[in-house]
Length: 229
Image (cartoon, rainbow, N blue to C red; front, side, top):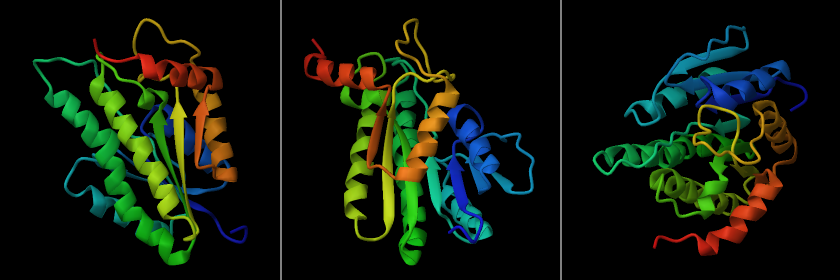
């Protein structure tokens, strides 16, 4: 791998963690293809962008094209995610949260994994959330979709063991992006800190990582007691 340029695909990289990590990979010498609903604004020779929604029927085709243009895929980062407070008059918004946060990741994996298994190497990183342990009356779609994402990715990690393909579930608490909503955002970490955590994941390929640690411990401790009344 040291003799050639490494290739990555970033899903959901028009802003926030996805955009910041794209810039980090490019600075580290990677070739990167980005896929998101809006342009990333990056204009360098080692970057290509594909504007597409992960829920669109042609998303797998666009993703396959991006991989073909790269020639191979060493790393895939799924950073696409949405989350809105529940509105009982518009539960379609909660359904779309599952479509983006969970099913978008599943469709990504379905396209990416065969490429990685074929060469016996590759790494998938999915951005989940510490909310995956909680039952949320305020945002049930977000917490539920992240619970499904974490479970799916960790199961996939076990399924791919022995194939040379690693899967890392990254469970963040509040990160200083537009996704960090609400009047109280305890232990929020800056985007550059989140990027450093992802960079370490690329180097070490852990099965899962939860940050910040104190928030992870707190959510684990509270999870058994947070239930609808």
